[in-house]
Image 1 (cartoon, rainbow, N blue to C red):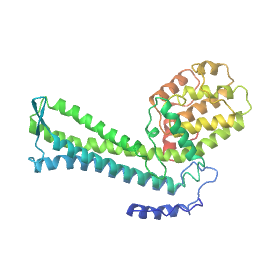
Image 2 (tube, rainbow, N blue to C red):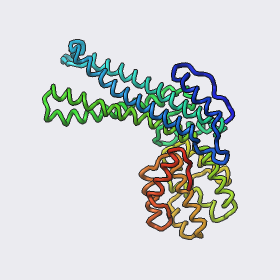
Image 3 (tube, one colour):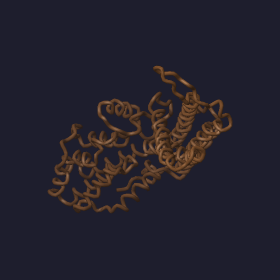
Image 4 (cartoon, one colour):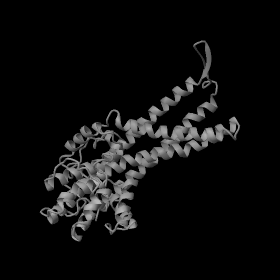
Length: 369
């Protein structure tokens, strides 16, 4: 670590965080393992996550209380409004709805601020991207240019700037969607309990249940943001080291490199949700091995494995496991395909071993396959 973090702090949390950021410059970092978080970085990342998750969950709980308590204290203020539509009179909770929209607007903006501070802390304390991915801006722009042309899901096609000049629409929509998920769950609960409880008891019960549900979804959304930030820190050097090692061993093997793209296709990273880590892995492999970026037809990976020598199959096994884990998430599709390889005798890693490797990687201890 040699670059001083920018002194662009603007608030009390930023002033507090600079004390930690400047300590990072004095911390030793293994030069041969730059993709492993050192003790100080791990501590800051862990504390940042805990702080942001706690405040985000607390914000969800406070939002529920801010919605229900004023209605109980000043019920006349939140009474329904009579509106005539096509000669019919309807009682609409207009004040209630406008108040709810105001609370949601405030909550989303506070979540953006908390998430922004958390991501900024993680990326600056790890000196990212200047110490990890010199072409980060180009990679993000290429990823943004690619995703609208393909109907792919994935949180961070919505956007995330590492130093948090936040996108105008991406993360606000993400936080809003999670608030709507909590609202939908509460609506279902209300409809079910409404069959058994009177109106007063139902209102009290819904209010109590809303606190943990909204707190959970706020915390989960904040965790997703911070987890993606950590993966963006660890992925570039992890990928470069792994691909370099793979190329040194198999770069000139005519049996290995023709099937690389089939292996990536099998793990779904060429057709699944776009992520920064998967995008970078594909680009690095294509560039290092001199492959065509065109996606192969696919569907013949396991059949081709049968014809290959055991050492080649073992290296392809490493590639498949690495590609499945490098984005920090092991999806249901990836688990199913790894299980299929295990059943066919092509995968020597057990499910528990893969889970342990994934846990180590997500905790900043490197991705060792």
